[in-house]
Length: 228
Image (tube, rainbow, N blue to C red; front, side, top):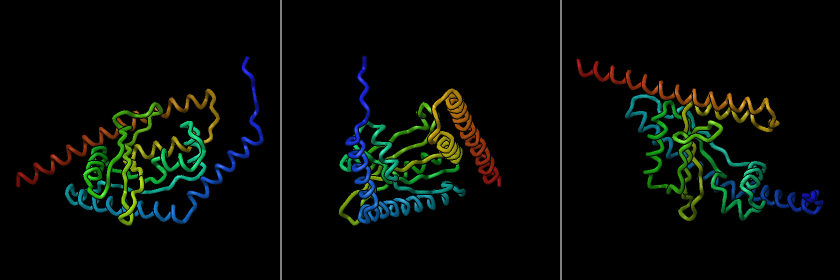
């Protein structure tokens, strides 16, 4: 028989102290200023890329750009999910997405155009790429994730996660977060998850169809120009 031992008051007190240390760490002005500097630098480069690509293809390539820094609660949940201790050392060494920039593109191929330009940007160093578009998560989630080292002040590199996805993928991810956040796991929730995965696949098909339609329109325009 498994011996059941309740959490002791000391354990709960220690966890609370560790959480407070993490909270103080991310609220420290020095930390916040460095993260914001890295975000500003990344967004400046993204805006340059957007201007260049939009001018080349004569259409909007990037629909929106947003950013965020993880909250102490989100950090705590991720450390627990990864089976890591709740301490600042593991936050610094093991979490690569404390700071994130999300780029939403109009079409599927634009995602890879932007990613390619970022990867070739000599200001940054890419340390990891995960393509959840080519290989979606079991939930159906799709996005291209890239971790960059972004230089600040010429002395230090800050890790920044960049997520690039289509408008449809972004809509699905927001819906999934709203429906699943703090939801109780039961039979009804399992049905919702199956529905969400089905709709993620539908969105992927729509993205591919819209890309084909855009390609046809562009070919028609090119032909019309050539015939003149």
